[in-house]
Length: 143
Image (cartoon, rainbow, N blue to C red; front, side, top):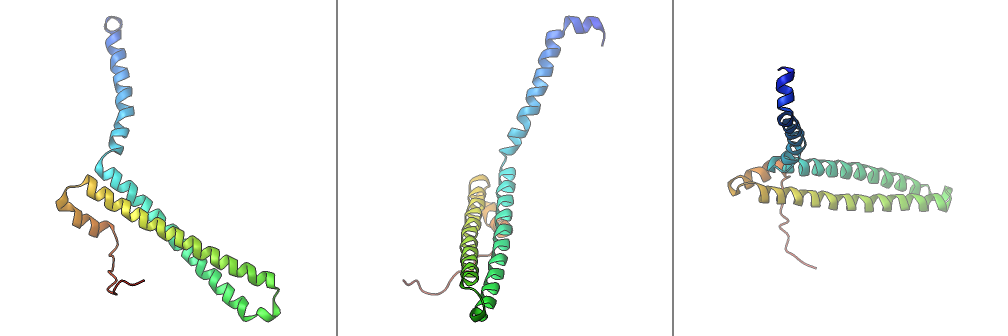
């Protein structure tokens, strides 16, 4: 490449550079919209929600054990300590319930992406691969 060709074709080189920059910017956005990337994104969200739920369930169990130990020694402790332990246990249970609901929502998102983005013949296979086995409750419905 010499100076003369660069001077005579400067507009062409400028257009090529701007096209290359545009391609570099557009390609990741197009890759984010593929069905596989959408599935990977919601699977990562589901994994994160499950991890948070497991962590909060462990903390709730720990708070329950602590509350039980303190209740066994209730006659020697201040009422404030017992009340705080009970509140911590109730808060832990409430947080675990909220995070369990978050897991259910994340699983529903995975199901929606599988249904919307993939062909029907792959739905069952992908649900079995990515979603946990749901055990049906065989008890009759009652209030």
